[in-house]
Amino acid sequence: MVTGDEALRARAGRSAPDGSGGVPGELVCRRLVLVDAGGTPRLVAEVAGDTVELRLQVPGTPPGRRAAVVLHASRSPAPLLGLQLWADGDVVAELDAWPGDDGRWHPSLHLPGGC
Image (cartoon, rainbow, N blue to C red; front, side, top):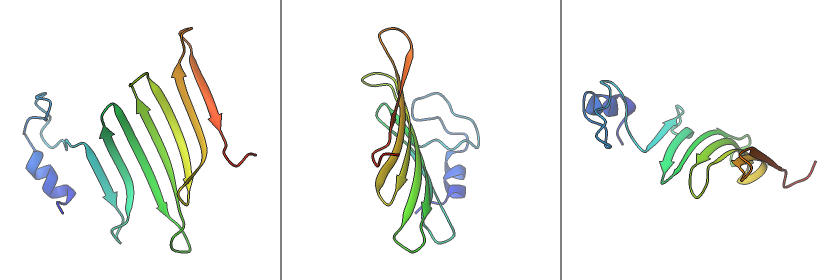
């Protein structure tokens, strides 16, 4: 596994994959995972196709329980912005927004468990 410092040293001054040149000291990658002292992923930033996602993950107590906040944006097939709250592998709340034919953004709130 490459550490963040090693990755920074390896990338410093090199061109970005898209040929944009990059900035010295800039970390350019499609997926970044920050872990806590125990090696558990806590922050995951990822680009997959036309979607970008940022996950903040919290291991739960007792072990096996967990929670996460997911922020995502996509441009295909149409622009979409979203925020999800996860608990123990299930989405417990989701807020999405997308542009409609009327030129306005339309929000949607989904609460699977009700309120």
